[in-house]
Image (cartoon, rainbow, N blue to C red; front, side, top):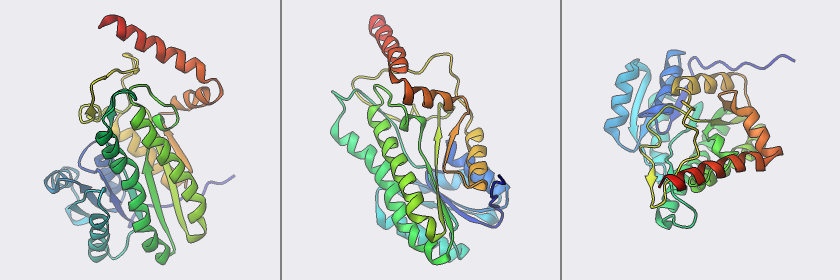
Length: 271
């Protein structure tokens, strides 16, 4: 079977959470491949700094946008259409983690995490779909996580936002197909970014991540995103070694759960 290829040169892409990590890596790769890119961040200065780092000033635009507020998303869309005259790709990458137990997690922090990770994604999709539908084409890329397939203890709230993102993207993919809009869900595993350092830390912080796991680079994730977009994939899991882990959890969840339980119990003994 021949895989349909979709080029990115000349396309206009908007990327949320583009001031660092995966978002910045995607922005750089897209621009290097000939796309025009709008980099978004809550902080305009950080967005502009990322724009400077990736170069191609004539093909980029940096804007402030807090995805928790629909009016800011609408403003970005208007400015993008004014500047580049169309909008072909929207990447929902903005998000943050929360590290705490289910029993002790602060509800206000939980709500804030959902507002950014899930409702920010949903509002952006609702805002951009009419534009893409009118154009007759478009692509929405939701950066989720392997944690949206395998729930992680002491990261349960974050996992819950990503499970919700996975369901949202996969259902929307079917709903929007006839409108010419392709929705792709991307699920990275451990990535070498400052994500954990920027996460909300509660009163009960533990990790089940094996110390031997280094994680993949943000650039590797960006390459997987581009390849998935070009091939119009339904879902991208990166690195490939996480595929069997996801399948293992789906078929034999107790195997992974027992391993995580042993890791948590070891940490309890060390405290």
